[in-house]
Image 1 (cartoon, chains in turn brown, red):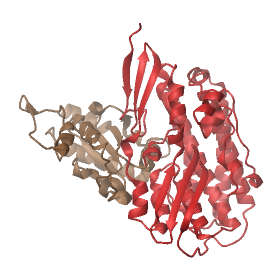
Image 2 (tube, chains in turn green, purple; image 1 turned 60 degrees about the horizontal axis):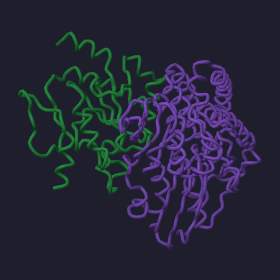
Image 3 (cartoon, one colour; image 1 turned 45 degrees about the vertical axis):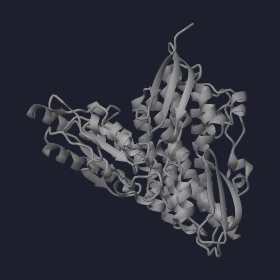
Image 4 (cartoon, one colour; image 1 turned 90 degrees about the vertical axis):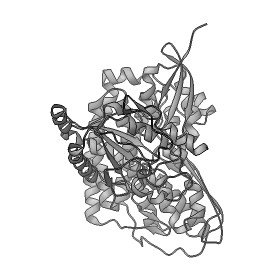
Length: 176
Length: 361
């Protein structure tokens, strides 16, 4: 599918999800998309739909209630996809590490390709991360990537991974 | 009997910066009932302030409750802690703190205006306001060293001084911004397509604002005169040209106008602070351990921010209670949604300027 990959390189669409951050990195992502920093000159558009996205920008340490939504969104993005963890707390938990409702970083749940440091990370770093993510996106294949911490058997339909109820399994196992 | 349908909005949606879920009960296009779920980003900051951090560090931890009004959180906690330590800051520290809070208010209000424009379908205006906002971000970075989470205030003073080059930069950027705000005021007032989306939409009456405990720009747009800056005497706001901004119609247009005119007022306050900055130390020793209970109210960009701090002479605090403006404004928000069109819901929501990470902590 060389035909599509050339388009994907010129216009990667971004999905942004706040998994419990303080808003600092979210408004820096907005500032990076806006004039002065202008991430949109690379063809990046902020879309709300996971099924049209290529790059997944996540901010915040994963809170107890947001993790199912995080895994669900991740599994709905079609391959190839790249995950960018924006901010210190997304990488390690940062200042929130050890708080009772926080899961210390998103890489416990989904595989991360690019980490962006900083509290709050600056728009320059976010642009750098997206440019790096584009390079990684080119090397990735259509092979299906699985989120971590998926307990129980993974269902397949027609020899392909089923995307249905991916996240529900995270919660189900916790109850048992 | 008419049939009603339920339409969910969130928890992840293009018009939302942060996770919040609404369940709208709709009758055709009209919203007749709303249910909101705000707890997606609860982290447990209040407990961590008393368990894992010492009282000198807590000021920087509570800043991470919210990225937009981080400085107001630090300021409220610091004032409460200083009250317990029996320390009173000198005039220069007070003025520098006020300067940062007002700069923060300007950039927060501009983000809200940009977001309201985007959710009303005016993408170009969103880009324009976000571009203008960079003038303030530049100033904040020059003063404090960081664009968003500037840990500028600490117990006993502020962390950096204002040099004469910085004052020149602030004067220059505020001058540029003042012109741009003037054009924005004209645009928000006269643009025909914006007036269709804003005027008469999402009306909160004065009685409702009073009954449902609205605060901040939401209440002032409805004509309810409430502003912590005028009610408390922690800072000398009267002598640097603070004016209470009131509108009367209570719709989205009025809320936008309260924000725009508050930006103009804040620019004037910042200029006055720089012109009349007193001399003195920027960092003084505040000795001792917090003992007793202190309550502080500070006007955040969204309304009254309330802090209760209790200590018993130990390094660790006993209790830190944070009551944020968005949390108090939720009942008023729910009331506004009822009776409006579903298509206006994102614009109405953005005009409240809700801050979920504040609310859930």
